Length: 254
Length: 358
Image (cartoon, rainbow over all chains, first blue to last red; front, top):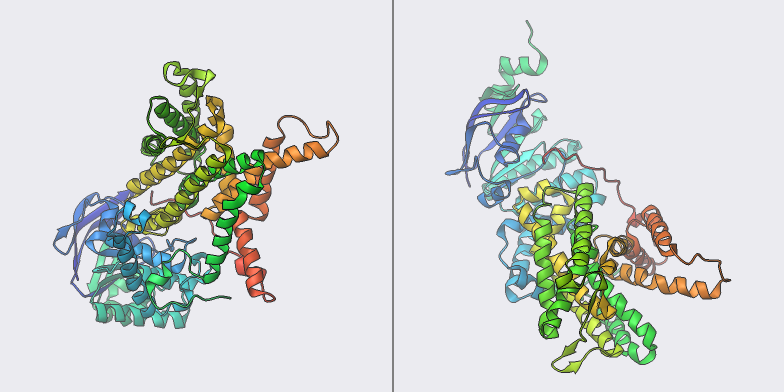
């Protein structure tokens, strides 16, 4: 399991300075939540770490590897998996195929071996299938296994995306608003699953979330972003009482 | 409903998972094998032609149906394959070597087209491939020293180690064998790691990249595979025509191929073959009605193009899943009778995703 260290990260889109000199660190095996009002730059942090955008300044280190300038498809091999705020599933494939695709970073056979179904390709398929089935079992997705993703209810799709990220066998997992749009029961399940993944697999988890109840329940530490800057950092209890945080969320009582 | 009884993942990876699949595919193969004995010479040639179209359709399906890249220039790939094959054979290269070599040459051209168009998608990619198709037709028509210009090129008769394959029956079996091989290879590729990467690119490029799919590499690979298969079809097409000219590989052929994959059902190999049968048989159906209906009732020219357009619109409106979708529905109707529900196949509407990460 690897930690994440972000130092002096800045990025702007046109005239908007989305992040200004943000630094933080996540210890291996820790659950860190990033919270903040809309437009604070939470998802931007994720997009920079998963290399969808280039940072204007600063460095990103995962474990002992500098990933600031890696190509976006090389992130998976480092052991970083993510989910997306607006679901980026492979809609017209089955749940099983979605999970199997997440094994791409672990691919082990050549194109020719796949066409001829040589033993190496078959071994790889069975191995991927075994890993995918383990995740299906952990998340109780058996009844959706061969369903097309586009036909699933929203809560199930959300869960499939979490499961897909887990199929990569990540060392660092980035969850972007996993509880958005879930009903209370699904939300409780999610809290359990996040904690379960960290406790059993030891995965480092960073999550962006608005649901303060969930954040308080699962995170070891909370980071508050406001207007692209780091506002506060600490345990959930400390953050909840922090006057600067209350001001940012509810407006200053001056 | 049927459920396969599986005790090992390996069982689930088998090509034919049900006992009934063995029967149905076996019966299909048997019918195709005895067809030359019952079918007349003319119709046998037409069926062989449909096989050739089906190979090309499988090629286009890999690109458009599985990787989500639209190509309006596959007629040109067919042409490159046909000319490469004809030229190789004219220079004394034996048939067994020339056909795969034509495929490889076309795949190389596919890479040359795919690489510069990596950043294009949707409509822009369609226009770029359309331009490619026009360029190829022009080059084939004007590079007289190599291609013989618009007068065309006469194709040598195919033979396998001295055994002539030019006869109707022999050519039929040849096309059948190549089609079976291509479908099998495509099926294996598309249900492996590579095929899943193609499907991932089609459905969400952002997520595909986040899970380690090298977008540029796999898009180029998809172009290469697709062009290569179409090139092999082109080689057989050349034999079918006997004499090839640039006009045979123009825009109209490209549109026919697009019609095949859309009517067949995007994202399914069975659909590619069904679409090829549909489009390939259409001229015969028209000819039949010309004979039956009073003289002058049907216009002599332009009818096919009009029909193609109409059929495409009707399919997009009423059966977006194509012939394959219809086939699956009929199958489900029989398997679940009398409990079939139309809603089973109803899809949640998916909206165009914003492309902000590109």
